[in-house]
Image (cartoon, rainbow, N blue to C red):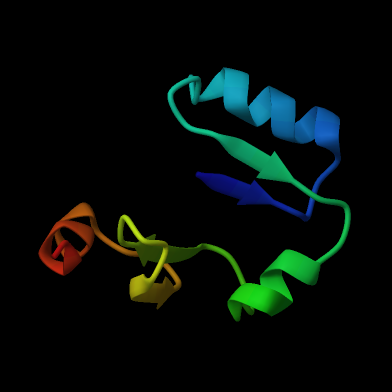
Length: 73
C-alpha cells in the first residue's frame, strides 16, 4: 500500500500511472493525520505489517529491498 499526503490527488494519480503502481493500493489524504497516527515524520518512510496488521518493522528514510526481505517473519 502507498500513502500520499504531500501532493494533490491529481499528482497522486499521475504518480501511480507513471510508475505503473496498478498492483499496489494507493491511498491519499489532504492532511497529515495518517502520518501522525503512524508515527511518520518525513518521507520516505516504510512500515512492514504482518497478516494481522501488527507492525513487524518500520523505517524512516530510504530502505533497501534486502532490509525489507530480512525483516519478513
